[in-house]
Image 1 (tube, one colour):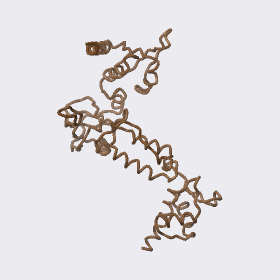
Image 2 (tube, rainbow, N blue to C red; image 1 turned 45 degrees about the vertical axis):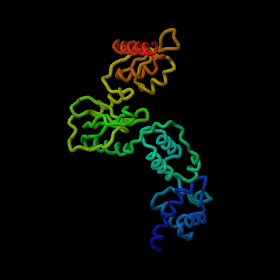
Image 3 (cartoon, helix red, strand yellow; image 1 turned 180 degrees about the horizontal axis):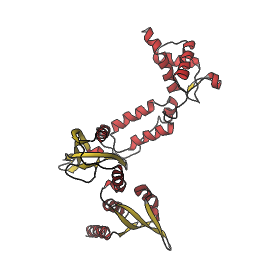
Image 4 (tube, one colour; image 1 turned 90 degrees about the vertical axis):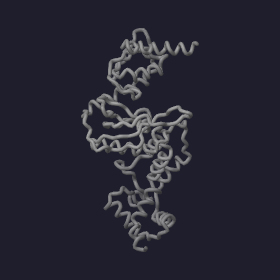
Length: 331
């Protein structure tokens, strides 16, 4: 047991420096001794602590500031190439706290891991952390595994088979399997707090999007992907899939209110053309290459601020929807 403790000395010291020291909280040798005794119930003499700190600093390349350097005490600096900054950790925690694609129990485990790599002082700043969001998170516990399995299949050029679930109304609201497709996977994309698989269903030749949180029981098939796609083709589809509705791109022209300017760049990216309308400061002309179904969904959501000019087929479709809606609301 004594030999085990001696061999662990350097790890005890390193863990204490990681959790309890930073530039604003330097530790003396005596404080390091007390922490090790308190947490690990091990006594280490001061000379051993100094020797192990030098080993960490000069042989194992840990960036440790010593009393010789700063005149006060010892602390471990973050490595900018491997260690997260506090703001980065907070961003990760917020993402997993609010993202719909991950189940609450898994998000909680990931957040715990994030906190374990911070000092107690950084964790103290978020001790009262609270999530303010509606109850829209997935219940699918397989999402992280799905991402791993799909990534492996893409890397190995193998097809996958899975159950695809959606909500259905029977005697009650429930989830049911709507298909069990065999799919050639090509990429995973992230859009509006959801992960999607870009793939081609067996027997088809065009891309399709699958919500990864609606996928369960993935199985890799020992069958190579037959349809080869260039990265540019995958990128072109992903960039044109507004609202994650795929389809052939076409040029769409619309008149939009100035309030939508930021939203347009957030939705369609910067590959759009914005033209001023003479003597009109409230509206501008938008030209964008994207799929019409996705644009239609976006335009309908902003119907009071958008007028589609062309293609005429899209304009007519929106007019039909408005007319049918008018009939329902004006009975």
